[in-house]
Length: 194
Image (cartoon, rainbow, N blue to C red; front, side, top):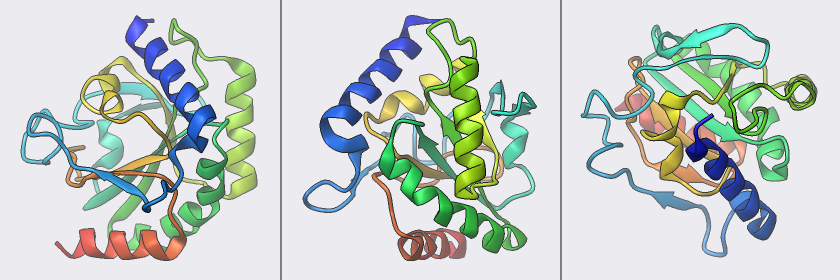
């Protein structure tokens, strides 16, 4: 694995231990606006427009996971992050409610691979158990090299979430910290009406 992924995961885990996974800073959730180069959704190379990975069950996945949906909420999480786990039941319910309207939810789990990007079986099993226990039955992807530079390197705390269009272009800010079901509903409704 490339050293950037190792550095990224170590950085996120260190920050999570110090600050509680980035959950709700004193003045509410921090919103990080996308940079000109990577996040406006207007640049075809911005976002998750080209990648190949697997999900936590070993099924191959590509950017095609977003096709067929007007909007997808991408939620980046870790098995060690309590705020991440706390919002997953709500995200599971939202996925069931919104999928018929053209809105999907996809997770990216950051801590089930080692620095060579090999799957750590115990961590993968833990991620599967978390998904089952929380009812977050939407797809959960593993990190691929193509995800790091354009997206995952843009934030330093989790949970981190953002919206993409049907091609994987980022069409929102990065939302750092967990949200309630009502807060997510409000954001989804706002984004889906645009």
